[in-house]
Amino acid sequence: NAGVTQTPKFRVLKTGQSMTLLCAQDMNHEYMYWYRQDPGMGLRLIHYSVGEGTTAKGEVPDGYNVSRLKKQNFLLGLESAAPSQTSVYFCASSYSETSGASHEQYFGPGTRLTVT
Amino acid sequence: RKEVEQDPGPFNVPEGATVAFNCTYSNSASQSFFWYRQDCRKEPKLLMSVYSSGNEDGRFTAQLNRASQYISLLIRDSKLSDSATYLCVPDYTGRRALTFGSGTRLQVQP
Image (cartoon, rainbow over all chains, first blue to last red):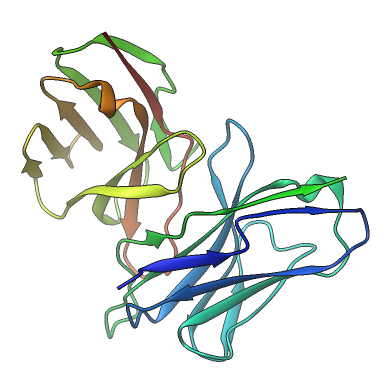
């Protein structure tokens, strides 16, 4: 049981390049999330998904796209990277009640992205 | 007003000390709370869930005061390995995502 895994662990991009970050979970969780964390700051929610085939915007969605084609995977895409997107990206997942309420989230180890 | 307010610290304490952090929240709709710890440049990890008035796990005790709208985390017999940032996270009814603040930084010194 690996929990939440993220690929890659590190990446350096040039401005304008694109990339996809992959998050996978093996806990059969319905909900998945993408956050970014800048130095000295808290986590900020980018996008989230409450089930396969569904996505929703979080607090800071601009410049990012996501897809949830399979329940266990949640992809975060940067179409045209900018230096302001230099950050650590964390993926998380949680189970949910039938009411839709979420519960504690479990995080992946993060992806450190630098955009030059 | 922020949903959650925590003293950013740092709290510098010697090994073996008892330290307490408070977290005040503004939305009384929060059903439960989580305490996460985050080590430098690592992912947040769930430390404790608090669904009623409190919870205890070894050296860690969380107490929830709904009337005054705060939750505290008490760490007894601090270890060097307790050095981390502690995040207080409310779980609101009907919300599908948690909101994380910047937390309180603890530095345990030898």
